[in-house]
Length: 397
Image 1 (cartoon, rainbow, N blue to C red):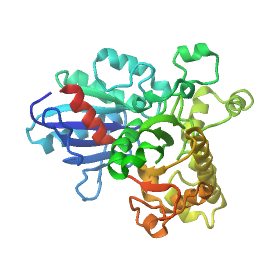
Image 2: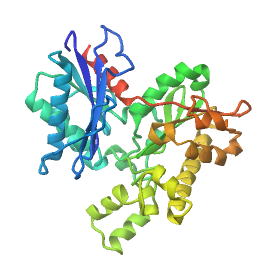
Image 3: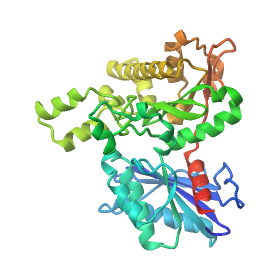
Image 4: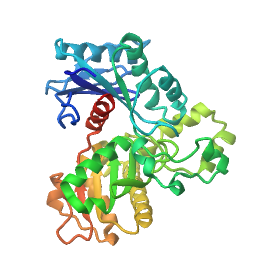
């Protein structure tokens, strides 16, 4: 790792790439929490790709090669990063990798063997895995001297007890790697750091974190370690999401294939892209759009009702597993910014003794529960990029 320079963090999704640059820490230390610079390319593969350089200026339209839009987007980011660095070195590149499979939990240096192994996990996370690997492959080919570190979203959940890892399939399936892994681990790992700082000993108790974004999951923590989570073998499990089903009776999948004669690819399209808030509403995967139309669009209202209901159902299950609840935390895009949905979720959980401070909730305050609430309710911004930068710094030390 370079004695100077920046750690570049890449978070590659199917249609967007977020990037952040963190100053290399002093020997043995962690990078600063605040990125020196960050930005993103959005709309990759679509007609309106844009580049946002995080400087407050409007996003810039991009013309990406239609045949290879992802490669073109990575090239744009490389150009902008090198321009911003102005000759200063890159110390390492950290990648968010959604799935590490049964072997990889700790962050690890990227090489050709690891890349080949992770490609085998693409079917388990098709919305994210192939794109992170594409970025790694390009850098391995073009800059083999540049250290790269893979940071796994499944890693934080390595503390799950075996009973939480098992799927009720023949045990040989577990031995082959068919098990519940859990996801959003980089977000939950940051929560373990931030909640201890903000809430002290309370966070060490029975804590439930709701990561609510376009993808969504819950994580039950005790001692700030994962003990149960809603996503399992794949990122399709658990909560209803923007376009994904969440937990679904497998008989419905068999019906789609056997009776409606959908192919495997068509079923994948339904489960990953055509369901969730978008599928029920027929309008949008964005709760902000649905909230604006729920008064006059019955299906928008129904989608939001089901979204909240599924969260409340899963909260109840995880509270039962932990034997109670001390701290409920909302994070990620919806969790951090949708006061309306937080209010509806907390109201439905009033039986647990939760009480909301309406003014604090409207302000997205760090603590949004009322003084008399039996459970503290909090809002905590997540910071997956910093966790990835910290991992890179530690691996390369």
